[in-house]
Length: 242
Image 1 (cartoon, rainbow, N blue to C red):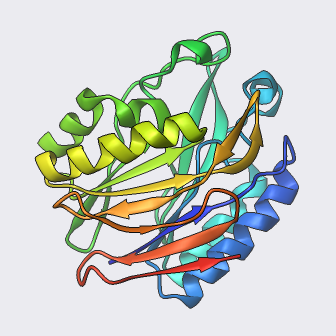
Image 2 (image 1 turned 120 degrees about the vertical axis):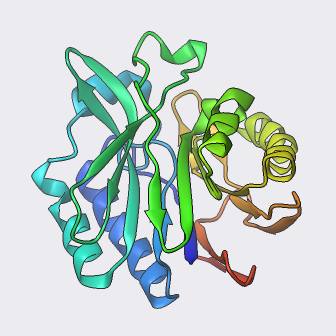
């Protein structure tokens, strides 16, 4: 199974333009034979909590039909970040498009304290199954909480996808935490981070992949957009800066 981690700079609050950017990255993933591509936290809007209520939508938004069409036609799983409506509230979510399958939404279950004025917690973990792999998505802060990754591992997860919007300080924490959980929980860990301005900080990329021994196999830079393609079976990888 080949997984693509996409490192992008989202356009603040512009879902339509971000959809077009996502499509270009999805096409790159397809060219490289990826079975799955995942994007950073709130990739379709940028990480902008103050705009989330206005921009929040659902997995059935017609603007997202293009992702389902590509998934169906190219047999690729696509995971995008978007604020979603939940009753009268808003969640930080990942919408998952799978070939010939109903869409799924995974909503961040463990929020950072700064996020509570804008968002509510998601209610349950979502898993993706493909070939012989079980994949657990995680969204930023919760991916640094051992309870989240331990729960994933207890459900026989093989691959842990950390979709994040992290500053340099957050990346430092990730570079320490992810190899630890990879080694101790027997997980392949991939991170997809934004680059550029987000809310009141700057995201610093460094999207990466660690194998089950906790070894860092590949990592992008801190300013450029790009992709990592990782083959979970062979452990081979490639990177491309955009």
